[in-house]
Length: 422
Image (tube, rainbow, N blue to C red; front, side):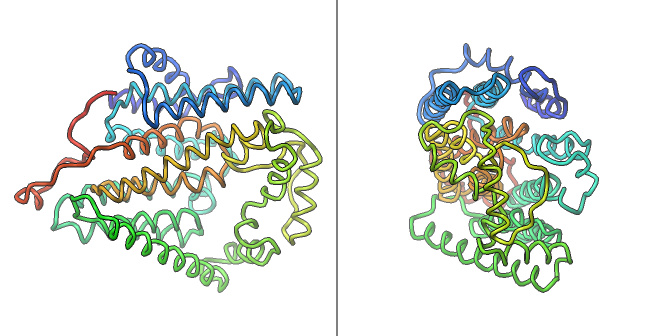
């Protein structure tokens, strides 16, 4: 099965144009989903809730497009986006089952494919020439994520031995430092928090109690504040280069603050949601009023106004994009996704394994991307894989205590022993 997962990740590099753009991985996953409908048992728990909320989102899309009179090209792509999300997730149920190691492997393989797409200039959401700028913006769009994931996986392998544990816990911090030097702000914070979690749970095999979880949470919150302040100081003083300094000043000194300055699409998407919170504005929502509002509010806030005017309502968010297009039921799916991701994070820390740092990296990344990143072409495959991993972690049984004589020996890189298929 690992060979099949590798082939799916490789196929993600290629594309076909059927109902809009599809990656080769989605074509293969559509075939696998047909098998999954026969082979997989009835869904339950969070998997059942995935289908419930995704189905409601699809129903909301149909209603929103009928109400708004969306054009065929728009609503066909909007419905296909949700449909392929469901299809891809269904295929993973058969390909991965309840094997969390396979889920981890697939997420890592897909990150390799995304970096390859970036290098080849075929990435769906960025400039085609961006991949050539390896140590510039391309680092945060794919290369840096792959490096951080690799560091966390190497760290997980080394954590199995008490002799290599000091080296293991330091490697992810090195990846975070590289991300900081290359001005990948979000990646720096996410990698550093994953590294800190790995450090705090390293070597533990027993379920942590509530006081332990509270202490880890408080430490992570404090560390997050320190990371933000360290970045602000380094960027404002020019320690990260002139580009980082100019970017920080442009966003940080704006009237709307650093967060909204970096995600200024909120200036248009929030008013659009307020105007139509229940049914939304339809798939690929178009309304020049909000596009002009976006430019006007950016100018008022002191942010640079660049680029061509489009009639699409800007969102730059999984959650807000679904809400703007398809109303509250579209947003409800991503609210559930945030909930199950948070549940998986708590479980990963409460029941630590050597792969806890990697899982925390995926979980915090989802908690950031869902409200602040667009749901584009590659993410129709990557997000279901990440969500499926978080569901498997959230629903994992309590692991049996590790025998004392085996604690100092290197063990296979696994999250659990049985490989039962769902």
